[in-house]
View 1 (cartoon, rainbow over the protein chains, first blue to last red):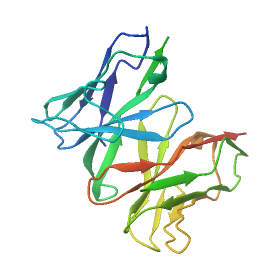
View 2 (view 1 turned 135 degrees about the horizontal axis):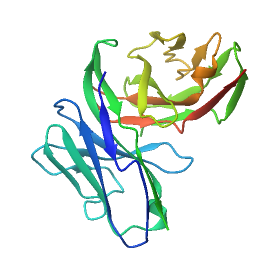
View 3 (view 1 turned 60 degrees about the vertical axis):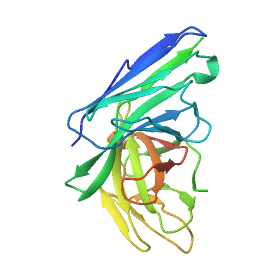
Length: 118
Length: 112
């Protein structure tokens, strides 16, 4: 199965600062995604990280607030900029891999980064 | 737009009890449906999936049937174990390798 790692696993940050979250996958993948899970809420897609081009953002999310990099097919970063307490969430990256059990492309997720903004 | 509604948790069961976690959806077209599980400290893992009406997805003793007439995809297991304690997410996707829409998740706690 796929291995997706994220760093940091958790952080506590001050209002107005920025945090960059790293996502590393263990093999080359075409599509990577970034999700946010606010307390008691479902996962919400922030953007699709495209290798070699700008990320594609979902409604309600903008590049200035959540800049994303995708320098190669195994790595992506998400920055949460100018943070406020409302940004306190779990941030997850994901990627599609071929799954031999389900015999289809399957979306795998990293363990998440738990962010608290004071 | 697409949406997924799951039953509120937490659900607390004794070991060997029967589990049902309800999931209903709203979508245009013919989505694929998924159940993901998140064990403590880990990422979401695909538990099972179904891609068309009347399909039954199954894995690790869990199963769910894609019911188009009731727009539902309820998760069931005949006899839960303590090791099944986790958060379960229902999700839908449209198209291959597509974005997923998730429910809010249901926490299951199984006790001895």
